[in-house]
Every structure is written in structure tokens, then in C-alpha cells.
Length: 238
Ligand SMILES: [Zn+2]
Image (cartoon, rainbow, N blue to C red; front, side):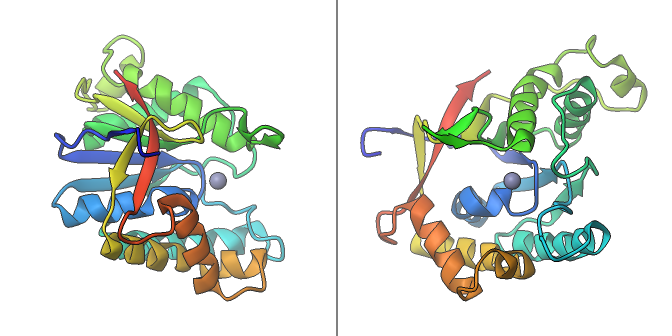
């Protein structure tokens, strides 16, 4: 990690596009807290409500719980612009419709930096990534370019979403990082608060106390030493 370059900082708006509630909190939360504290604008778009994510809860109930948990998780890191696209959790396909919806959200928020989740097939050798993450990550990388092209989704222009060619980078929360964002101890603490808001989700995953789970996950991502904490990204230039 020590030899990785710092993430670019000369931007004002970042859009996180993820598959599920909690995807942002498991990785990028501390970086988001750092950015919003510095006055940058950050918005979240989630393809699904994660309604298939809590084993004991039926999807309709789960969607309500997880949407509310996600709103609180966003508030904990200074984000109030949150959009759910309503794709079916667990069955998201890499499709033109998905690319068009992401391109529309990019045109709406006009980010300079787009963040998404691991689009690679695996997390590590032998650790298969989920179908939703692969589909969403790859479609985000495509849509960041689509957003600037007036001729790919002409119907978006009819709906008032003019092309936006201001996206300069897509940063992916993958296991092949190229860049890091140093984060303060305060940002790490807010990331823990943010992940811990996914209370029912975490309770269903493990009997360990929710805050312990959240602290452990955030430490894993940020390195564990609050004075040297950082979040790593795989950066793509547009
Ligand atoms: Zn996920």
C-alpha cells in the first residue's frame, strides 16, 4: 500500500454507484466521510434495495428495513442524496437498460469522480464475486463513458438529461488497488457509525455485536491504525 499514489483531489462531486445497501459502507465509507468533511459533494445510487439480503426476512419487509438503514448510513457520512433504481437484488444483469439508468444518474448529478464496487470475477483467488457486483461494476465503467455521448442513449436527452463529459475517473473498490485516499481517525469513526446503521442486516449475518462487526470491517479496509488509515481504489482514467 505504501507505494501507491494518492487519489486525485482536484474535484468537487463524486457519485457512488453500487449494487446493494451496505456495499458503500463495507469499503468506501471512510473516504466518503473524509470528502464530505472537506466540503465535497457526494451522492449514492444503489441499483437494488438489497431485498434478498436478510435470510429470515421476506423481500418486501427487507426492502423497507434496508432502505431506512441505508438512509441513516448515508447521514452518518454526510450524504443526503440517495437514489434506489429498483433492480432485483441477486438478479441484476449487465444490460443496456442498466447502463442507460447509470448514464442518466451521472448526467443528473454531474460527478467528476465515480466510485463503484469490484467488477472483477473474484475478490481473491478462489473467492468468487457476486453476479450483481460484476454486472453493476462493469456497467458503471461503461456508463461513465456513455454519459458523455449524445448518440448512445438519445432518449435521455429527450427526458432533459444532457450529456455530461466531466467524469475524469472511475475508482473501483477492488483488491487490485492503484491509489489511496488517506483518512482521519474521525472519518474512520464515522465509517464505523455508517456501517453499524445496517443493524438488522449485520444481526442476521453474525451473532457478534453490530458495532464490533462494523469496527472490524472498517479496520480491515482502512488498515487498522487510525493514525495511518487510508482507503484504496483501483483507478481508471477517462
Ligand atoms: Zn453487495
